[in-house]
Length: 203
Ligand code: MN
Image (cartoon, rainbow, N blue to C red; front, top):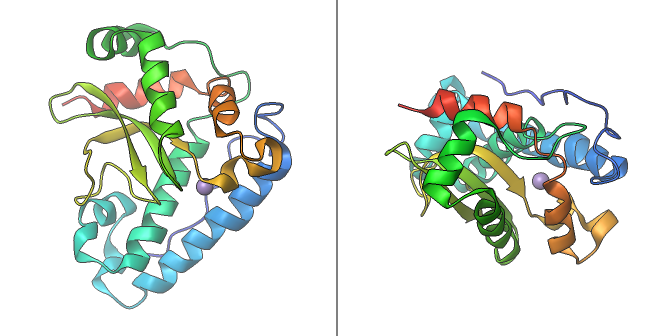
């Protein structure tokens, strides 16, 4: 099975002024595209060709570093694009809002934890909101293109929201001001989609 670069569900300019069109275009058409090409090259002619991307992630400790980096890159970015939308932001409603209150101490506390997870990740990586095996929400971060589905991850869970804090995600517009990018990210989160993922992840 060959992996494909997914189309974005919106235009490159849809998330402005929070995330600029040029950043979105390079991020999607160059960075994500390279992860997909490199992943396909790394799995060609092996048993890994028959696995979907989530199965690859869950067994990543058995596979070469090129599959970890590029397979993680493909999974993470696919989740990232669909975590955002034009006119996003605000706060979640319903069951997800109740779970954030019960498991994380409320939306403001979640925002603080998630922002800190992104801001304190040294170098490149991701911040995550995950559903753990106990069905409880947790916030964590991973380095490089790792994610909490991976068997080698320090924090494990089913990721329902991911924020890319690699410099390529923000540097053109925000330069070294990662905290400003993180603040802006909250204005583009598609909470309807994250709520659907939350309810689907519950066991
Ligand atoms: Mn990225």
